[in-house]
Image (cartoon, rainbow, N blue to C red; front, side, top):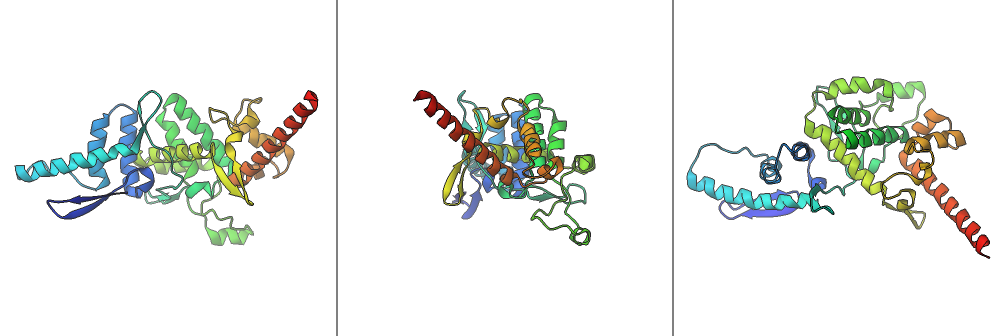
Length: 301
């Protein structure tokens, strides 16, 4: 977070240095500008300039004292330079948004008098079935850039809150997730609600998932006194090594888990916490590596 002191007005401003430091309003506003930048409808310089106004919830004035406006413009340009911290240069020296956050800046949103709730920080309330579905949509959008896919992705992750008294009546246990369970049958209902949402929210959901996916493929997770290196589960493209032969990515992992029966049938696997499945995948991968090492050692003797 940048602290800026404006000498003319003696005013102090706090400006986020990246997406993770944005509050919900800022995140939605900036993500809309990022979408325009990524779709080439906004230049990099224009992005930085407009981002200052969005971050500080200001509107440019058309008229006023020229001296005051000139001083204000100098301040705006200085703040715009700080917006460059939202970006990093890739191998082709292109400006790409930094995606290194695991906190969800917009945990809930109400686009049309109906509040929907999304993933909590670090996917702590994520179920494996919804993760697999959203990963498929995430990769689809990366390939075809169809905005309809973005809405489907958001409608999969953001769902209404459970009616806890009704769940208790049915005898279910609260699993820590306030959202109704993921069910593809109901996605169209949530799509209807989200058609009223601004693109900043929709694209922000996509960016948050992308940031989490980047984290997952290289995560170092403390576990029982050890550090689990999840990078061994993924190749350079972020695809699971467990499913390379099947060619179905995480869908193959889900089917394999259902066949193994460790977490029950397919529907039960889908409702298993995401991180539980990831730990199981890690254990399988470690066992495979150890068996391969023993085989190679025996072969070389």
